Image 1 (cartoon, rainbow, N blue to C red):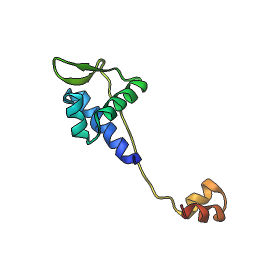
Image 2: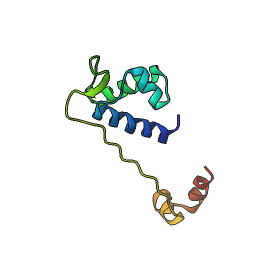
Image 3: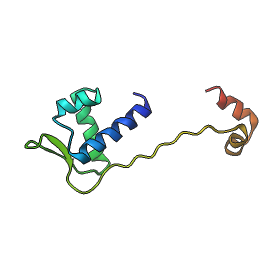
Length: 100
């Protein structure tokens, strides 16, 4: 799975949990376009990060047991050759990196 897709899923799942609008695991899987097993894996990842995620059978939704949420910041920037030289030291390394 691509990294950006994973971040987008985390953000969507976080929002749905915060709003208490995930639906059942099956409904959530359909909403996120993943399998039910992957939903359980994502919830486990949230728990491993320290988030207290629980499920309400009555409301049929996941929710945060405490006032918390996941905050993800992600940015992409293109480095110039001059910036690459500052990081890696030589132009030869910059040329090697540019091919990847």
